[in-house]
Image (cartoon, rainbow, N blue to C red; front, side):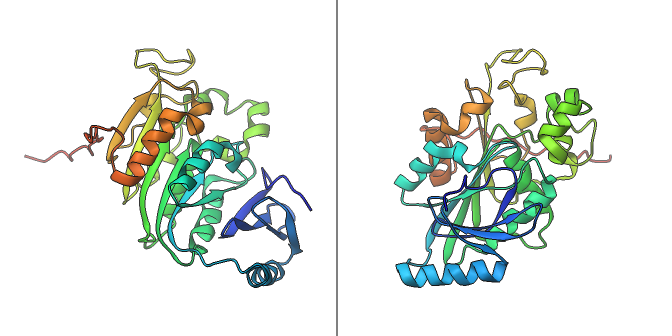
Length: 294
């Protein structure tokens, strides 16, 4: 049966060559989807895994290998928001993992649990890179907080408009009933560091990462409700996480970053070389030095 592929009520827990096993956040039951979002099984996890094993054998699906790129969407969105990015990564010969999670129905740490299960399921993969948009970056950082040892296969990550220091808009609307209903528990965790210690306690990635921010490169951005330059949703200052290997600012709105040709070109270059610009010159964000006691 054709499905919508999982939006706000399903979380991925296993991936294999485009096939997914997902869990429903309310009923807790599972289903198996093929790369075209056709459902092939529903019920227990064991049943879905058995059915996947049958499909592997019947269709002679080869094992996974090489490099995988996990695409992680932001709040309210789905992996379908990465259409052009997905196509561009596939043209490089990389296995693309379009990760879906119930962004408005579970907290950020709960959604990080789904990500952890998907990463564990990538058997045969030698290298894992991440491309994350908006809250997707916080899901990754929350996943890192849950790990005693980070999977050594994770090599690089590109953050697109990630509110690493929280979002002014969440501060402004966090008490609004409509905001609470639409954005759910994760929306309450998007507030700035001044209003919550959740984001400030998230770890800095121990692997190489670069940051793409949208903005006008002026004192005021696209949204007058946000302090300083911004992409219409996230302040440029909030995206700047110390420790980044490279940073680049481009004139693009938050919602269009993932499929913008310039953003895609920068992303692919970073995943291949560790820098955004063709010149090969990075603009890292240094980690502040701890003050020394005289």
